[in-house]
Image (cartoon, rainbow, N blue to C red; front, side, top):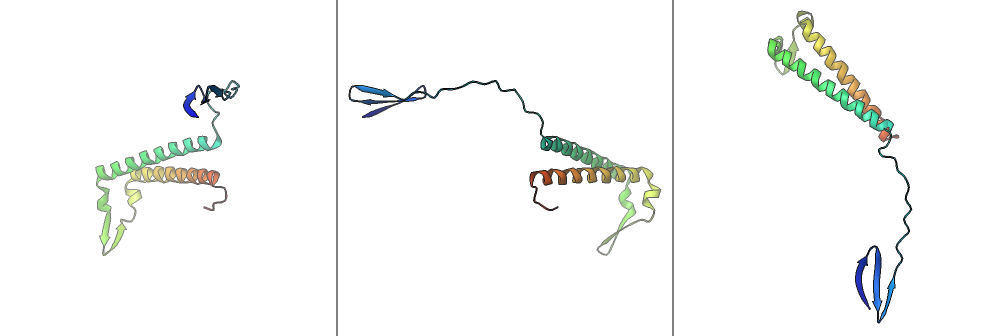
Length: 126
């Protein structure tokens, strides 16, 4: 008995002078719509990615403002503790605004990350 290989999905086996072929599976065709509707988890993941991008931009803006205005001078190291000047946010209102935008973006991103995690892992407590 010799196995000659696969021919169009059927295995052909020769035994002596007789040949046996397996019938190929009948394939039914159906129309499948292209693309899946967005699932709630993919929409949530997209919102989380946008919130993360907003947070990253707010962080970069705050750091750039700190570097441009030498705000690090208002923070002093005393021993092993960092102390900020009292009223620094009143002294630099633009810096206060940038810090608020960053904190808001971080809170939004964190909340969306928690929602996405709860959706993926229903029994997990956060």
